[in-house]
Image (cartoon, rainbow, N blue to C red):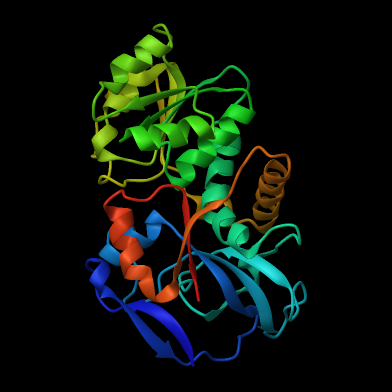
Length: 323
């Protein structure tokens, strides 16, 4: 028997229940691992509420790190005792789980389990946004919404390390300091300032080459007004609700803009690409371009409390659950 957090129906944080379940032996191509740390992400909220489809009942969580305790038939890349991390199928909020070996990567000895648990989903999200969706280079003007959030801080750090001129939006002075520390040269308090006007002032009218938006409805379509001609609007989350449907002609009116809604899971579907992205991420961490310190750690049984704080935007940085 292992302890898991399970949701039997869509709803608020209260639907997350601590339960005991039987864990079968790993099947062909699977690995069984014991979690040492579990990453918490906003996608977990989307799954719980039903905003993103999931088959109930289910165990939330797409990201974690731990130790291999058994391998299924045909698995040759991993063996019991290996330190591993993953981003993959639901099932992370658990003491132990079975998962496809294709979802795992070896965790470097120099990385803690907590780092492994938060680097995969958020770190690889930052990687594909900055290195694959729009390849940020020195001199690019970048706007990051929610710059004090888990992904937001990584975007500010990495984009700054790549030589970009980073502006971030945040909701409080406390979060402004966090975004500044992460590498944002300019920070806009969006509750007190018109972020479009401030972007115009900061860039002296040149606007931005790319906008990274994990907020959604609350920042659209104003984000388009922050982009220079041929700039790219990258929507990768919807913490305030999804971006509403819009007329594609709006992109022409705003300056022949590009708009995209990429997904991490599409990028990592190819194992070779997954490995290349992870290696690039690990290099950035080792070079000091990314700081993946865990902001807070909570026991697994407090998952509902963590979700409530996450939805209330009371959290900053990366959070882990520990079995």
